[in-house]
Structure formats: structure tokens, C-alpha cells
Length: 192
Image (cartoon, rainbow, N blue to C red):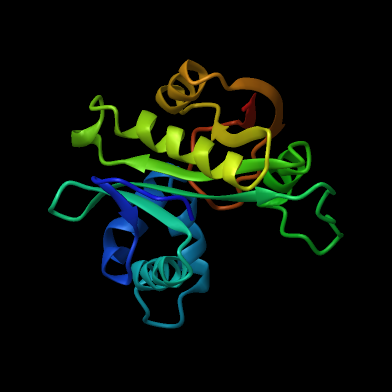
């Protein structure tokens, strides 16, 4: 991991409640929908989400902005390799369009989650996290960045476009029982 200066740091397990909120917010409610399906009888789906975020924090996969009162924004991402991931007949339909779009972004650092609580927007936190993402991508020897956004998430899309991302592809959203107004996932990319 690259060095981080305050207010940015690696997430810890104690950040899990905020991280679950932020992931669900960034994912347009899709994470909560998935956690509901993963929850055992009587288990709180949010507990599933928090446990998943605790595991990612233990692995050092999440950067957060913390001004002294806990995480107010987060960045999660990973390198996409040179070859496409297989999409077999048993691949979950809900994730198929997302994987199809990721497969169109080989050799890039993928911004999987970038989220900020609404009351902290407009303060440059998202832009700073995108700069951190660029630094991580460069440190991993990559020359491109990628992100997938919902077609209805105009605020996020404007942020990415201000930072050089351009639409390169889109795919129809598969909704199942997920309650969303979006119609398409949009792949945005930029060169480093």
C-alpha cells in the first residue's frame, strides 16, 4: 500500500459499521439486497455486510477519510488482470453485466467503491480519494483506471468525468428483486 497522509488511513475492523453504510450507498442498495440473501434465518443483513467489510479491512483493502470521528468516506479497489474472467452458464445473472464490463477494462485499477456521507460532500474528499486511487494504480504498474457506475448516479459520474474518466461501454442492469430505478451500468475509464 502507498503511504497515506491524514485524514486518510487504512480502514480497521472498527470502521465496519460505516463501511457497510458507505458500500451500500455507493452500490445503490445492491449490497443490502445481497446481504439479505446471505443472511441466515433471523440474522440481520447489516451484520453480514459489517462482517464482509471487517474482512476487507483486515486485508488492508480499504482506504478511509477520517477527520477524528471515524470514517466519513471510503475507497476500495483492485487491479483487473490482463485476461477476461470466465462467465460460465452458472455465473449469477445479477453480476453478469458487471463482470462483462470489468472484462472490457483489462490491466486497469478498478475503483470498486468510492463513497462519502452526503454531509461531507463538496469538501474535496472524493477528489482526494480518486488521487489516492491513481497513486495506487501507478504503484501497481498500471496505466489505466476504471469504474462502473449506475446510469442514474449523475453526481458520481460528474466527479469521475472531472477527473478524466470517459464512458467506454454500458450494459443493461439485471434487477431480479432488487428495487432500483437504474437501467444500465456504465463503464468509465481513463489513462494514467
